Amino acid sequence: MTSIDFVVAKDDLDQCKVIATELPGADALPPDALLVKVERFAFTANNITYAVMGDELKYWQLFPAPNGFGNIPVWGFGEVIASRHPNVAVGERLFGYFPMATHLVIEAADVNKRALRDGAEHRKQVSPVYNLYSRVTGDPAFAGHQGDLQALLRPLFMLSFLVDDFLAENDDFGARTVLLSSASSKTAFGLAHLLHTRGRRVIGLTSAGNTDFVTSLGRYDQIVTYDRVTSLPPDVPVAFVDMAGNSALRAGLHRHFGERMKCSVRVGLTHRATDADEGELPGAKPRWFFAPDQIRKRAKEWGPGGIEQRFGTAWSGFASLLERSLTVVDSHGPEAVRQIYLDTLKGRIPPEQGHMLSLLG
Ligand SMILES: NC(=O)c1ccc[n+]([C@@H]2O[C@H](COP(=O)([O-])OP(=O)(O)OC[C@H]3O[C@@H](n4cnc5c(N)ncnc54)[C@H](OP(=O)(O)O)[C@@H]3O)[C@@H](O)[C@H]2O)c1
Image 1: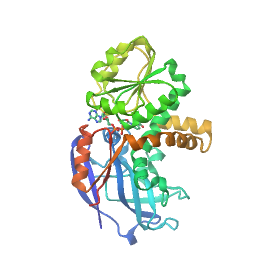
Image 2: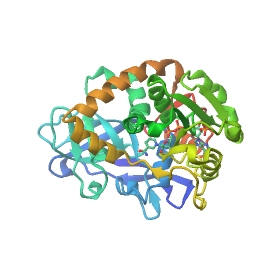
Image 3: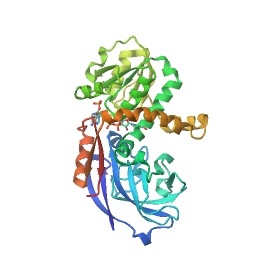
Image 4: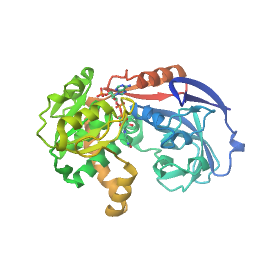
C-alpha cells in the first residue's frame, strides 16, 4: 500500500511534486500505531507561511519528506483505517495537523475520551498543540460544512483570539484605533470581529482588489489601500497588527505615526516581502507575537478549561458570521491540489473563498 504525498522544494516554493511513499501493512504497524486516511484539509496563506518558516519554526520536522523537500502541515480530518491501539477503533474520525498526503501513521499516545497525541520521536520538538488530534466521531460541529469551517478558521481564530486578549489586557497600549494589514485574510477578519465587539475603531489595510470584500465583512470602520496609508490622520494613537509582514509598509506606518504608534505586533507574512533592514523605527518597537507564550500565561491565570471556555464563547459569536462571508470550495486529486497550492502561493485566491482539499482521487 502506498501514500500519495505532495511535497515542495524548501528553497524554492514554486517547485512542487507528488510522490508515492510505502506504507506499512496493518500487521506491520508498530504497537499502538494507527494508520489514518487523510480525508480533507484546509489550505490558506497560513500554510504558505508554515512553509516559509519551515526551518525556523521546525514545521518541516513534522512530516518527513525526501532531501531538499518538505511536506506542508495542514489542518484537517482523517479516518483511522487500521489500529493497533486497544482504545482507538477503525472508523474513528480525527481532527488535527496532517501532512499534505493521503495517509499518515500516528503513534497514538495519551489517548483519552476527547483526544490523542502522536508520540513519534521526530514530532517532539514542536509545540504540543501541533501533535494533538481531537476525536470527533459523531460530533456535528466537526462534520460536513460545519467541519469545513472549523478546519478553515478555528486554528486561525485562536490566533485572533489570543492577539485580541493580549491587546485588551494591555489596555490596547493606550490606543483606541487598531490597524490590521492583510485585512482580507481570515485571521484579520477574526481579529477585526473581536476588536469591533470591544468597541475599538478598526482600520483595515488591504490591496485595491480586495477592498469590496473587506467592506462586505462589516467589521472594519475604515478601509485603506496600501498606497494610501499616509492619508490616515497621524495625530491619533494607534496599535498595528501586521498580518502581511511587508517591511516597507511597516516602516512607512511607523514613520507616519511616529510616537503615536503605541504597539506594533507581527503575526504573519502573507506578502512574503523580503525583510529589508528597516533601521530604527519611531514608535513602539515591532515584535513578533508568540501565541504559545500567551497560551501559557492564560492557562496559569485562568486555570483548567479557562482558555477553552472563553475561546468557545468567542468562536460561537464569530462562526455565525461565516455563512455569509465565506464560500467553501472543494478540490480533489493531485492536479487540483497543485493548482490551489500555486494559486495560494501567488496570492490568486479570492478572499471570499475557503479551500478544502483532498489528495484522494
Ligand atoms: N503567528 C501565528 O500563530 C499565526 C496564526 C494564524 C495566522 N497567522 C498568519 O496570518 C496570515 C494570514 O493567514 P490566513 O490563512 O488568514 O490568510 P488568508 O485568509 O489565506 O489571506 C489571504 C490574503 O492574504 C494576502 N495575500 C495572500 N497571498 C498573497 C501574496 N502572494 N501576495 C500578496 N498578498 C497575499 C491577501 O490580502 P491583502 O490583499 O488584504 O493583503 C489575501 O487576500 C498568515 O501569514 C498566517 O501565517 C499567524
